[in-house]
Amino acid sequence: GGLPCALPRSRHNGPEHLTVANANLNLCTACYAMGHLQQAKEHAKTALDIRKSNVGDNHPLYAEALVNLAAVGLASEHESRNKKEAERQLQLGVAILERTRGGQHQDTQWAKSFLPKEELDDEDDEDDEDESELKVFPG
Image (cartoon, rainbow, N blue to C red; front, top):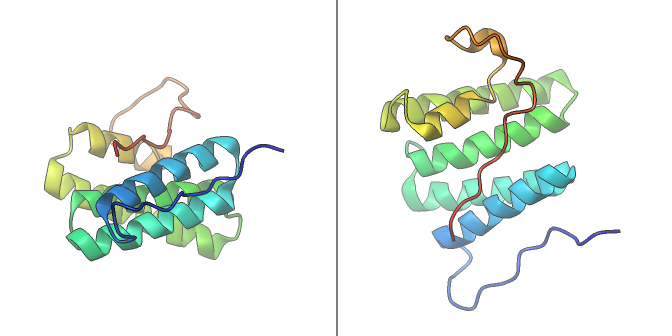
């Protein structure tokens, strides 16, 4: 049941356009929320590749897509090797956002929300286990 997470082809923008990356990230977010983690991962990977080819791998747009991919990986992979890769991607995404947008920027704070609690600097005692959510990206 349910609708598949699928990306309609755009006549106006080529497959490497940043708006196509945004659409893929939004589909990633929807699939993630519905528990379709394999589809979410595919959309996140597509968005990451598009953003990398458009802005490079040291840019906040790349970092956002990397954090999305990492979050899906952390939610779906039980194998320690894959989880380590997702943790590495997440740490890299956070580092890029800290460097390019600053530690207090909302995007950096969003990315940090996926870090394991022991890696967070602030002593936040409230139980916010399920507060980390993927973002919605404007088309």
